[in-house]
Image (cartoon, rainbow over all chains, first blue to last red; front, side, top):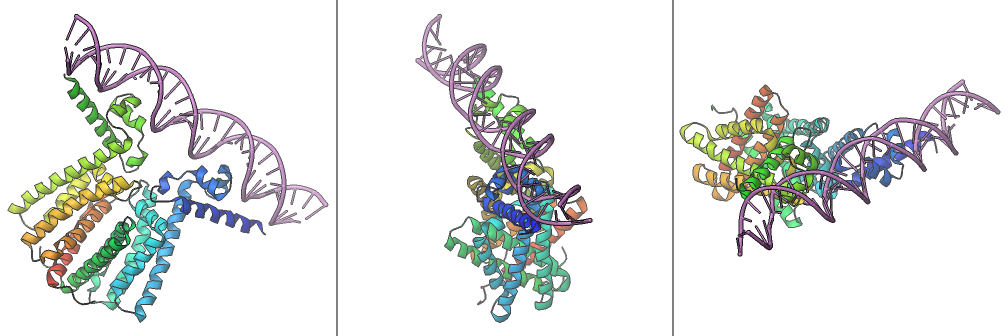
Length: 202
Length: 202
DNA sequence: ACAATTAGCTTACAGATGTAAGCTAATTTT
DNA sequence: AAAATTAGCTTACATCTGTAAGCTAATTGT
């Protein structure tokens, strides 16, 4: 095995170890270099051969998380074409992800309002991607006036993200209720935005 | 001065010290007992005369933060009665609070999705209070059907909170833009919820 | 084949942390 | 007035942290 391959393998081991150590009770900021190294099976100081910082590792995790969600949404669009409601399908897909990859979602959720400005920016950038993609979709496929698509998309993404956060702590049937609630909220938004051809005075 | 008075005074010193040490770069979980005690002007171990835990202190802070916001909203309602738009006034009042007490707002924001389940529950409870109060208002004062008031209120509070989070990192004029955007979003919601006398099939 | 690079290791250190033990002095209670 | 309570202090300890220094051994480049 070539040296570069081995290095990449160790790098993945570090990333995987970090994801594995995230939990409902442990956010990225309370991860320790030593613990991550231990779980990755390397000496603490070897960590520096791969990342300058814990922060550099963290930003890598955020990137990976955003990537996963992006792929998921593509998959969701695929489902929509042959299936029914856009809103319902999107939210249900999203909820599946949240439940199935809760550590990944929690990372985004927490670092979005965390203590590190670079982390917040990184998460904001990822979320902005979803908003732009959704806005494009809204412009093409719905009655929403072009100039409001972005604002509507941002509201929708906010509500869905928040629903995901609620779902993390919820029992399965409470989760269904949350899904239901969110669908209603998004429909109101869509209806409201479509109805307001122009924003009314005051 | 009586002993109970002195004790209460020290307790406040601890609480104030904790609030003072929160910052954009430092959340509650990275506060240390020793540092808080130092800023409060007591020995580290004296802390335990007032709180069993750092957690107990943290929950106290969350309670105080919720209380402040509650008082603020009462004040906002007062403004509304003699003034104009409910939505605009509420959001502007909220934004003033966020900017003027950013440490307090950040505490709620972060612990809402933080690593401690008790903290999350405490914040969720505070937020739920706002939702219930807003839902009452919507039922009384708007065209929203009774059974949807709660769901609408939750969406509104979510969007406003999120706007507050965005505002924390924003420049003053970006902040105005955020306020504007949020007003639009809430109006769409109100319009949509009022328009859906009954939820449509699928 | 030899030299250079480098992934990873071991050892070591200085600093910070939470908290246990036991003391002092002042207020409260009786 | 005597006894009990208690807010706060000082000292001490074990633990964990990040990271610097220097070594080894294996892959790479020439």
